[in-house]
Image (cartoon, rainbow, N blue to C red; front, side, top):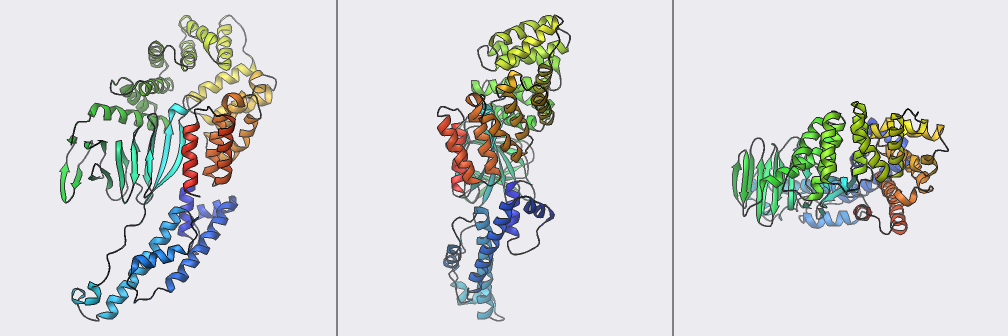
Length: 523
């Protein structure tokens, strides 16, 4: 159960009801959640006293709601305020029904003057969406997309960079959307797409709903919506979608539907493949990821950077299952992007795969290129592979590093952690240990397993080592991210300030600013 689910349970149990088994376990393990529950119960008690003061003769519902909510501190967590406001609305509605019942016993409601004088019902309650942002471009280590969790509340907006996408989940219905790179979203009573494209991933219960260019689209089936100014393109993959403009509703069947201008459907389909490729990669469905990344890498409608990322992950997905196919894809990557910083990394795996396929003659040119242009760690590993062809024996550290990289490519982070702990234990004088490289890789492996407390503790080992100069900004960002997920807002803000001070030119600043904005908006 993640932090958002825990906090929603806290708000639901603020009235004193027994907590679920999962919440009880979390409360035992995390003192800060126990403090939150006590605070929520105090607020709920204060709200109850306010509701008891509501008189049936009061008909100004909106003013009553404002007065009740004003008694609560502004620091109350947003979804909890939503829950309390809902409780206030229900109580006031019951008060209104009492007016109706007491005023006209036995008479039809439509003939009663008191009922006719009732005000317009209050505006809809605030909605909350949970946002998971992923940025493969910001990943220090190829193979892992940087994730940033946020909340999108009514009245706020979200803008994605050209090299990131997001999963957006409705807290109320569970409906989940995939927002494409460059998308701009706003939260009102419904989710609003202002620019770019969004695709329905899944929904529970009722229909999913999104508004774009003044039109509202609803469906339980899979569809995507793209908007560019007044132009919209709706791609209906299965079933049907209802399109509502003002009071006019029509049904859209399978296929592409354009209004107000032209948006290339090929571009929308390429972005869809790109985003769904990363979703398949994260779930380790490598066959699906390989097919999806191939589609987007071959697209002529995506920008050069996106095609390169798609090509890289196409190679990585193939390497997790079919090394012979990965060799073909990797060679095409080296030929297409000869000067890119990721090429030595790709060449290292090409050499490894070719040796595994018993094709050493083909492997040697790639490994020699890594020795000449790769990072210190890759150079050493490539030289080890070349030396092995001449009969040399690998050292313990070399064997562990080679195993680490292969397991990292397969996203087996538990195995990666094991290799690094053995390296730190058995080879304390190896240069990868004394330079801090092993500590950094251990931090990354533990963090990718979701063990946030352990990763935070390991971060300081990296930040106190020579590796800090090379990867300290990456470690500080993730340390702050993990602290924020554990509810330590002030500590996370201090960590972000340290990142800005110690690494003023860091490429992580955009992600750090997005995390800072999210934390400040919920203080």
